[in-house]
Amino acid sequence: MTSSPRVHKFAVFAAALLAALFSAAKVPEFKNGDTVVFFGDSITHGGFYHKYLADFYRTRYPDRRIRFINSGIGGDTAAGALSRVDVDVREWNPACVFIHFGMNDVDRGAYGPGVDRSLLRRRMSAQRNYGANMLKLVAAVRNAVPGAKLVFLTTTPYEDAAEVELPKGASGWAVKNNVGCNIGLSLMSGFVLDEAERQGVASVDWFSELNAFRERHLKTDPKFRFTRWDRVHPTEIGHSVMAWQILREQGVSPVVSVTELDATGRVGRCENAKVTDVAAGGDEISFTLLAGALPLPVADEALAFTGEFKVEETLNRETLRVTGLAAAASWTLSIDGDDVGVYTSAQLGRGVQLGFNPKTPQFRQARKIAEQAEKLRVEEVIVRNHHSARWFFRGKTDVDDIPGFRNWYETVFLKNPQKWSDYFGGMIPGYLDYWPKRVEVQADLRRRQDALLPLAKPVPRRYRLRRVGG
Image: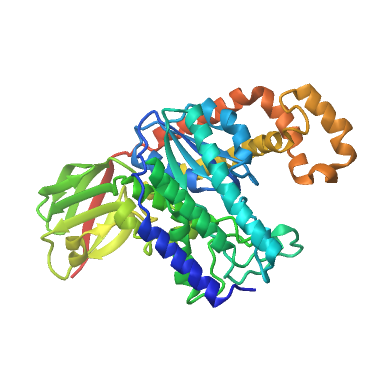
């Protein structure tokens, strides 16, 4: 089931209007010693965008020690998040807080085929409540961490236009296609951008960026989507686009390293790179290069879209340029003894990009760090599951009284789990074990994240160009 052409045209128009009308303060670049909190719903809780930001900073600025804190909870709203500002924001004393809510506030169930007065009222009520609750939440965050810089994130789009094959046995809320939901989300996004401008804080318009992305691809592929089958949660592709947008708006350095020399071995322009021990003969040039950064690791699923978003030029520029080589010749480039490519003199004269070359040892070094960081991200998601149990059962029992909560779980909840929630109830045992030692658990996660920094240090590498043809 897909939405009507009229609904699509409205979404495209709304996205374009949002992008044209709003421009907020610059998203702050993260500095050494910063703690950054990502305060949101399930798109943050189980997501990747904050992990991809950490991957970038760890490999681009290995001397910066930055804390990236996942403070997302699945199912949460701007109203619900008010109850956890102290635990999930204030306790971290962050330098910067990214705030992202809306997908659960929009009342997706009020959208779909057909409409009546009741549904229209629900839609409008959701808009009013979202605006009021976001203002309360922002005020609470400001009060909790008055020195922190805030960044408002718009909602991500709901993918009502893609043809989705439901997995076997799929049931529940995700089965229904809430056609037209993007109209509500676009209005919420407009509110976020408008409020950011009014308050003089930075914002990132994910809605417009991702909506334009899906519209481009749906023209040729009706099954294209950047979310999972539920149409709500972005895949690694969607999260990559989200992270790239934040990085571009921060104005981070696009340079991994830029190295230029000529056929005689004379070193020219070098940026974030140091060249030593140059040896040049007729058919061979070799040198040692110490770069100041590693290339940006990108999820395999997202690599095909790096060209579309100009990631190499804007975020991952690793250039080698050698001029004055014999015309019409070909050269094999090896790094630390491994052949990484064959290039013509003309290509080398223009400069070759190595940032996404999987054969280079620096690419493999960055990828290995990202793989280790992914294991820690999974552990953080589990920690957020524990926090989800605390969030969901607040008000139903005293979640701070661990013995009392355990007794309630065993004597009340287990007698009728469906009355409360099978999903969140399954998180209670983990929470009961975690909460008394949460400080130690979090400290251990931070220590292991810090242990990745030395692994991100670039090392000197021996480059060799040898003539193989022409």
